[in-house]
Length: 284
Length: 354
Image (cartoon, rainbow over all chains, first blue to last red; front, side, top):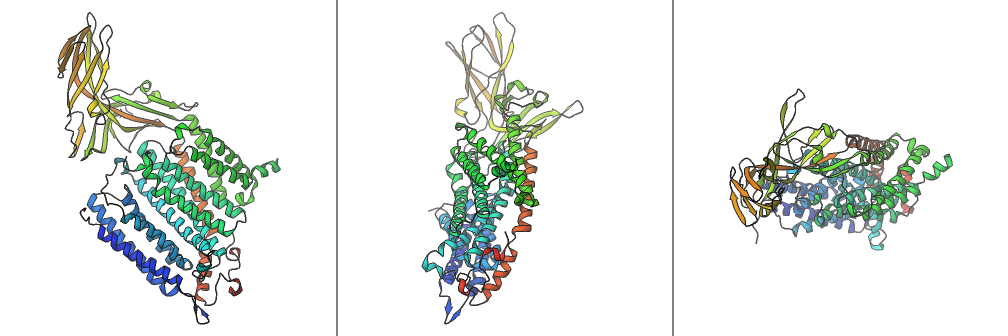
């Protein structure tokens, strides 16, 4: 049995807060949407508690990150455990901000929070191994690159949450779950607006990453596995936006494209760096 | 002419070009050296043509400042990348402590056909270096001490390493993880003049166990060298690789003879006399030159600013949020059910104009 490292209790507490928020959000949408003859906004009573729990989760995860940072002496940039915890933190934080600022999207918590919890389950299966900070990571552009990347992935996640609802509504039983939300047309509109935002932040991430790569490895672009994945991501969003804004495509197809872009982004983040032997692998 | 441009500007062609570029990227995934560059160049050229036509003929682009800036910058990036490939230089360098940079000594040199930089004007003198190692032989900061011209006829010291390159005339010299030791030897042939040279040993500590090389002097037998180093190397604790503090015994093996030399010692071999003068170090660099990198940065940032401006002025979602908020607060306004929707959300275009 490994020694209990100081950040783990905070991590577990944060995950519990996310888990309760997830259960609450799913319970809220799964309720009947009629109180007698009256149609009610069934998510309304849960809006604030869900936001509060996500905020508490973000706070607890930030303590976990700070604990680890102080213990090993560097930020969460190197191994998979660190990447997952920092993404749990940033996805939760940015989703909470969107949830707060765009109230109509709040029921998406029933789709978005379970996706975030996939990362939560994953991080629970990983040893919190200490990592070594490569000398080329002492560079401010790394922060900029990672920061934009986190915003990009978060906007993809929100888009996927909206698109997920469009697709779930195709299932007869689920139709009633999201009845309090706007029509598919409006959700589709919102989802693609988030994808445009994702494209902006993806572009910024690529630019900052290129500047960092130039400093770190003496080249700004070398088509390594992670760079190629990130570029494919950018291309997929750009392609989706062109098709969506130029042609009349079925909403379910548009939603499937948004979900596919999110899945591609997910694997770019959490897959490519750990099977590729390229310089981007991490501890090189 | 206009009809041709309109045909070339088709969004269908954009989609085809993007799919071709995606295929090219997938083909070169993780192994770009093994795949022809044309799988990327052809789709990019196709998209550049499509984009140029669209910028000229498509009012949805040229009447919207943000989109115009964004698409023009994409075109600019493709053109700059093409110029970059024609004018770039990529190489490696391994230089001995105390040596002056010589453009002829570059290794693995690759350059674009129009490369015309002032590499021969680059001047610096390599000095010593130090590399920090943490427990477990994890490499930390590299500091390479150089002498560079101070612009007033003298020299000044500059320390480079890791993400801080030496930049001269646009050429960027990045320290690589390849660095090592070189015994300086003097070979005096029978009836000849002494010649000074260095035995370039493999990178250290990467090949700590294989510090060996061989050399055949003129009119002599092949000499095998093995360098037994004392650098303070440690697997379990932090240490600093510093050539000035390292010592090394040079094992010389030639014919039937095998001797161990300390610095300053000499051995007589068949064909001449070999003196192990001292131990020095060599440093490895990656050399990079691309005159477009700053332009690429500015054009890319400009493009993102254009797209952001377009988003801010044309695609903002604030209005949607406000309308929807009211809808959610009104019982009976179930937007998924058109019959009860009260017309609030008949279509997305009712709420936001794309």
